[in-house]
Length: 454
Ligand SMILES: [Zn+2]
Image (cartoon, rainbow, N blue to C red; front, side, top):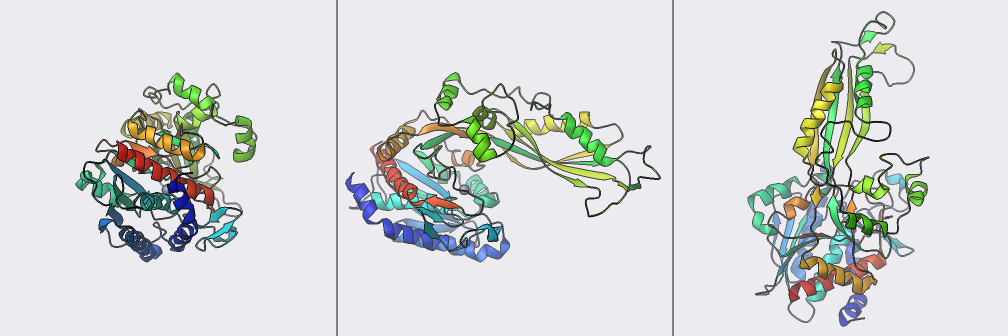
């Protein structure tokens, strides 16, 4: 144990109480009712950074959901680390499924329960406390900047706009993002790939109005029928997506990367039994589950709307039917290209008599992170010293749309979070493990120190 570890442990109760104060602010960014709370959380974070000796602390781009910016003491000649995180949280619904109220943080069995505890207040606060730790005894060894936004859960639009206008904000030697999780307890991870997204809505119209199924049935088109035909043609039963050209850009992970995944503590049987809780896994069986969820594109139907879905019976032939469908994209695919391929495939699958429209609702390109640069050696060493195991390279099946923007000035973006896989982010009873929180502070403080050494 180093002096730094001892100091962190001596302050641990205070750190936890401070975090609880932040967690009590219901900064739900998607709900306009909570705009004032988002501002309150931003003010709290800004005040906190000021207290820790940051200068140039500003609230940028908005009065209600500002981006909190702060700059640590100037360390001439030393590298610069940008710390990114977010103070906004997901809505707490369904509130009655929480064991204790979502905005009254409480520790049970070593876990701190509250909305935002792991996503992302607890994680970004660990990075802030790491900064406090390296400031003990005078000057920190590295230049630190903070960029903590309030719209991550609702699209990060303000941050994208800001970085288009002021890309210099992300000019740094490394960007640290603590908003992800360990692969398993005791297995810190650094994410090397994120899937992209292409979210669409297909609308099919087959007649001007709904028609009576007794008077017309047997001789007229049905919009649901047409929609089901289209959807049925987009994927084979064994999981191959039938969008021509879609797989052409897909770059398979290297043999080395796939070998590293095999060493991770992951069992497909346990995954099916404990996480998925279904009768069987589906998809492209020749590939491992990790490859299927991390490195292959998907096509999922999220919902089908239209016609009659109320109680009882109504004999209608619907004129319009709509489906929400999204594709997850993997490194080397481009959202724009996939949009064109998907549109073509849907049109080709549609019966001649159907008018089909495809709307693209939102999306993101996939991300591949090169982890060969020095900052990744520093994060690996930092976790190795704290956890007894360095970071394992993993990928995520999900998307963090802000990552490419954070790296647009060339800084390596390090996705090395301190959550655990069972933290239930976005769900009732979200928690952060208190030990993980302290370990995160110790690991991030080491990382910042080693970054200062160059
Ligand atoms: Zn998050």
